[in-house]
Amino acid sequence: MSDSPCTACGACCAGFRVSFYWAEADDAPGGTVPVALTETVSPHLRCMKVAERSGPDAWRCIALKGRVGKQVACSIYPLRSSTCREFDPYDARGRPLEACNKARARHGLPPLKGRPS
Ligand code: SF4
Ligand code: SF4
Image (cartoon, rainbow, N blue to C red; front, side, top):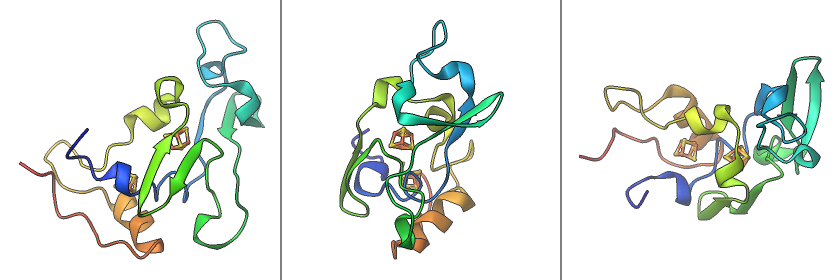
């Protein structure tokens, strides 16, 4: 984690609605995401509640702590959904994801160049 750009960023957690299969919430057997932090999207989908409704943080996840672009942490890190766990800033070849850099740009953060070697 020490060379991850994410702990000093958080732009994706503040820039996208994060949805996932409903049974990943902890009111289903084996689910982990605290259901109180989620909203229903459809019969099969839930999303993280948002803490902001305007500006660059318009989709800020309620579980995100800290200041975007400075220092952030996920308050439910071990319990987060597969959507969060699978979102990596880099693809398999180490190139930055377009969605990541778009989220960073919305917060005035420079684009990632590639996975540090
Ligand atoms: S926008 Fe990219 S660098 Fe920032 S927290 Fe998300 S994945 Fe990490
Ligand atoms: S649950 Fe954690 S990792 Fe997922 S969007 Fe919210 S703050 Fe980010």
